[in-house]
Length: 149
Image (cartoon, rainbow, N blue to C red; front, side):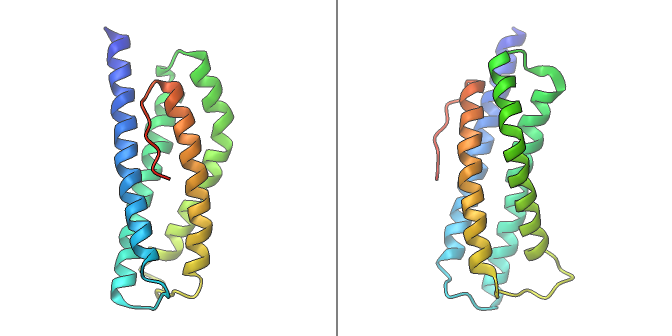
């Protein structure tokens, strides 16, 4: 019964990750539709909302899935091997997301769109890579994954 419960928890994490991923990409695209960017309250509001959702999404993958694996709740060698191989790149992408969030969701700084287009482009590339890594890890976990990217 314990194994069945672990699998259900895995499925739940994968499902939550996919849900948040879809929301992140939806907002990412919505922001992209505002090009050329200008410092309007709509742009600032969407970017702030996106940054906050992005952190929730990244946290779920980084702390929800990886923390669970590293806590010793996973016994399958194939999953642990994949997780250890993927983790360094996964972690770099987490750092890139946190940097984006620090730049655009900081009430102490004046909102600026000067580098928003290039920052979003780089972030999009990082997120696409992260999605590939997540899908690989989730497939090892036994979750059914439907990629959004």
